[in-house]
Length: 322
Length: 267
Image (cartoon, rainbow over all chains, first blue to last red; front, side):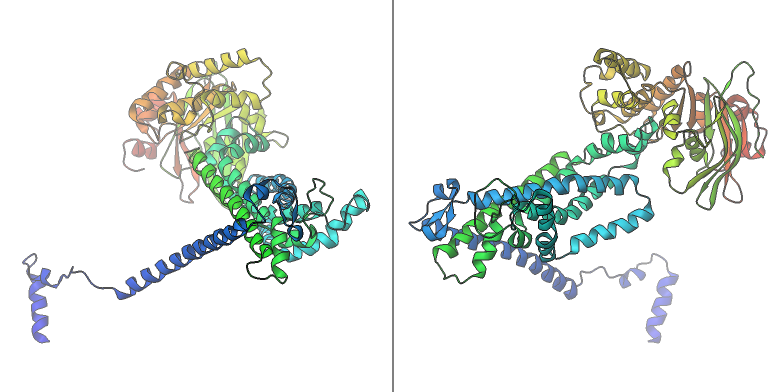
């Protein structure tokens, strides 16, 4: 012990003599904890990838069974406007049409309201008002969709029937489901749009104000165009959310596929149909059972295309104000 | 406290600050600044960081209004009116007192649209040909026309930094202000672009009153007619120490602190 201390003293007294450098250890160390964490995180990533691949695999193989059976053909699936498994009619259009109409109504509600509230929050609201309004919007995003569904059937539908008459508006109808779905998508669009608007540099706003622009002129002519990629991405993600939404349409839009363009009539959407059919008694490998995978595959392709589209839009317009 | 410069009797003041104090919340950033700025001259505001010179500059076109916690006391007189009077519209003020910022900030639009934006929001009623003409005049005024005349449809962001800053000057000229405020307009530019902006300022002086904040003392010395020196007081509030013709400030400063700053002893 005493000896070592003496060496230390000598080492420090002879600066740069080389004795001190012996204590400097730069050799590689093994860090088992680091390896373990890295491995664990890698597995976490792999699990989500495999799950996605598994879902896609099942969708394709089961759909393959469906399209392989003698009762259906892909051309019938893509062109027929009747979906009646009892009589062997499998045209996707009634379901697809209803999905498109409810989603369209939802976006008609959610886009202007979401954009407007985002502009208000980002350009007009004082920090105090924003600190009150943002949490309220986030609560809206946290409401379970089944609650929205009952809100549609117990409030929106009676309201519509009151306004347009009980003879025009059926008890189950696409308009009610679509409107409430719009309220559900609203906070998503609003918060994504607000993020995009807030990301626009302050200097651009100052440039506009410095020229004598009002808040509205600055927001509409400078901030919104600069944030367009983010706003479009928010819009597209909103559509995918509406297309994939199940509970609201299952409760309020009606059961039974119907090919109609009248939003006040009942018509089952793709998601609503899957939910209803799969909750009944279905034998494995029956045509009914397989048909829901074909619908699921169609839904999957739609949302996939929308996601790719939003990714493309974000990349295409990003860095526009750098 | 403040030193008042005696304005030239033949040349009216463009802007006059009277006992102006600016607060950010409870913090007083600038205290009791009084001075008058002569029209069609270049006035430089100099001083070390944090001395409130940018804050003073931004108070001249009520840019500080955009900061929720900012508050201004005292008066800023422009054409006999107090810009901080109760019924004065900040948007109208900014239309007449334009601004060029530290970092070039062209809008993500075409060069043409960058210029046309200001006139359009200010109620432009002319024809397309007249707008073409206004765009050309503004770009010529900012000595940028020859460089961009063949690519007016291209994005303002495709230009170099110095060109972007001249585009921002052209954009300010297009709304025909009387005063142009420049907040360290060359700090992000290379020396050649800086020289171009300075030459441009001398050109613009014929028509416009220019107030420029600069960190660069050589720039203040060579490119301004009057210089105002600001300093942070013990209570961390910025104040005006000395104001006068640039020659006098740089060659024969009256205040010891000015002399120390100019000779590079601090700041």
